[in-house]
Image 1 (cartoon, rainbow, N blue to C red):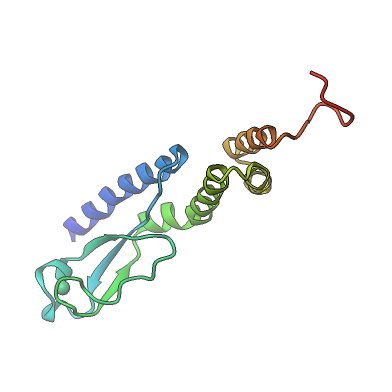
Image 2: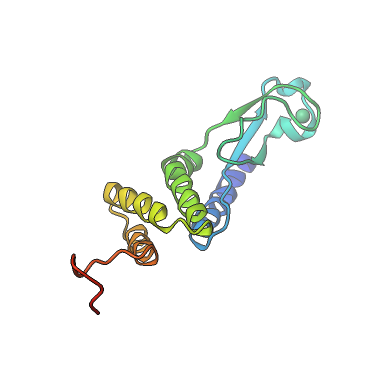
Length: 147
Ligand SMILES: [Zn+2]
């Protein structure tokens, strides 16, 4: 059992790096662990279990890429604790980044604003304010462009 535990801890650090990487505009990808449904009939790779990095919207693997036998997804403590609660966060940040890249600052601001209200996330709130400014909103007065 030891190698499996080690593998899931390693991927845990990796997930954290990916998670924080998303704050710098990288594309985060969750890691899933798979193992053969029938280890006796499986190849070396899936008998022990292997990790697979995939996009948030990608379907989970059903077959081992090595031998083509059926595999099942293993849910470890790490993935449950780190990936699942942040899936929405990752998706939201990605969407905000997309809006920013497209120059749709008011869209980015609204999304970030809504999400920060819900989660009380200060970084997202700052991002919302930045995007409101870029979009040309004026917070200080309702009447004009006074500095
Ligand atoms: Zn296999």
